[in-house]
Image 1 (cartoon, rainbow, N blue to C red):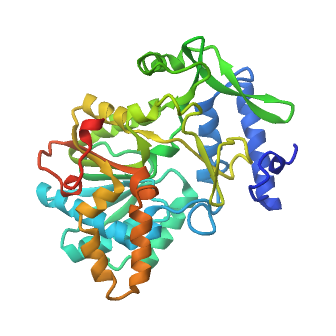
Image 2 (image 1 turned 120 degrees about the horizontal axis):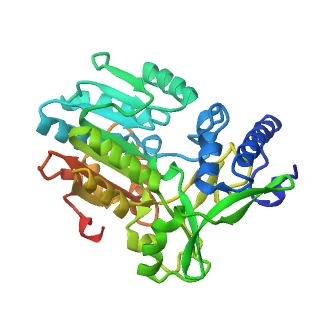
Length: 390
């Protein structure tokens, strides 16, 4: 196996143990590819390198979050994020007069801690708090974090490995949809062809597949007049997940926070290489074959398709806006003023900037609300609801 650092010279070289782990992931994927006659659909490749038990990026013990990991999420950047989000959650729980919280992909556990501590202050603790985590390693990390940092003992929190059969309350999905495996396609002779992965010598490479999985992109190619060679993604798994969650939500709100676009923005003619992005030690690049199992692989979220998926199972569009507008609607500046009394104003101001910068997280990240049997207007979408753009 050649040194992949020669392909991406600006990316740091992993240490010996990490490289050995990646070699095991590669061997696993090569064995998996053989089952598909040496041509693996890209979503299967993404699934294996991210979620293969004990091997995939999200299921091994590598550092993922924080300054020593590969990326930082909003709850780790500032407690202001959780404090604002708690106000939206409290509003929904008050409307329901009871209800629980389900957090999907809890990361470090910092969002759960921040929410529950703030909800106690607001007087709107949920009936229960469930954390859906597929990685045994991350679950252990979350358990330790909650035990050490949760200030309250009166809330029932527990872990799930699959979606609950029936749910009333709030479902939170922060930076999860972007890591769901996607079908990639490339326009060839004015039609979408599925992108796959094959092995050549000791490496992986992109190859086209003669299949019907990319037929879902036919309408997209025709609608937006996508040029020859244009490459992008469709996220059938994300859409299916929203439908499944929506069918199990009896009453309440599904809140999805992630970076992404409306469909028109997603399939802009100038976005010729799609939205796939990899993250390794706080460096973003586009090589999905760089040390498999050691890096995150993501794509932007198509919020239009998620809204349509929710609508198909009886959900309503509660709102769609930028993270900046969402946090400001929920009183970010007022909450920050209180925080500045116990922390330096410069520190708080820096955190606000990182959360709300229009060219950074504030504009790139969007918030989509899908409700079920919940007709009330939600405060988080007061300032700038962009639902009409979906």
